[in-house]
Length: 251
Image (tube, rainbow, N blue to C red):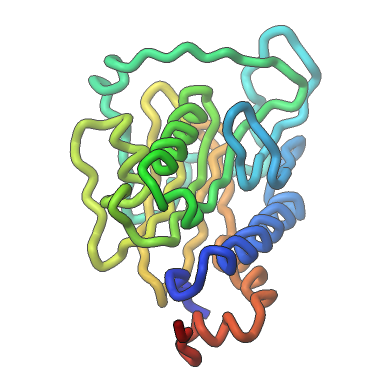
């Protein structure tokens, strides 16, 4: 079943679906996709930002976190690069101009990656777009990898989509979002010069698997299509009819 046009329905309908999709993603990650000591949690607070899914690595407490061990079962970037159509690397010049102060809290359960599903509320005003971008940039600054699914077309506050807003903090070159494929999937690998692996799509297309990085050189593939469809099965029939074009909403 193809990707739906979620602009057909009110924000509350997508919010309900969003929660179900997060649960399906968590179940898939914890059901064998994540290697070894990694696990995923839904709807947890991480500092000032709230992540849809947190991927954590269980380790013993220490004063200074040791380097993350090699995650067995994850795919080596050098051996099998993610199968996406587009890749970007942050500009070294842009990175050198930015200065941040990171306050780190050391615990035995280290945050490794975040999965974020963009909602209409993230795009409805400029301050919300800025807040989302700052959240993503802050995570990457702290070495936390990201997977962002933006299934809504650009608006007045994100004319190149949410990835365009995020990436403007890392690169001076303007980001060009394909007009025919205005929806974006972005997998960010944190590092001194963050890299992002991109897929663009439109309503009616299929969701590809996307990488979720556990280290800059290791990732797993996340089954977005399978989990999306599992979540969609719970959408009420009335709203499925609207989303699939069998019913029109009247004022």
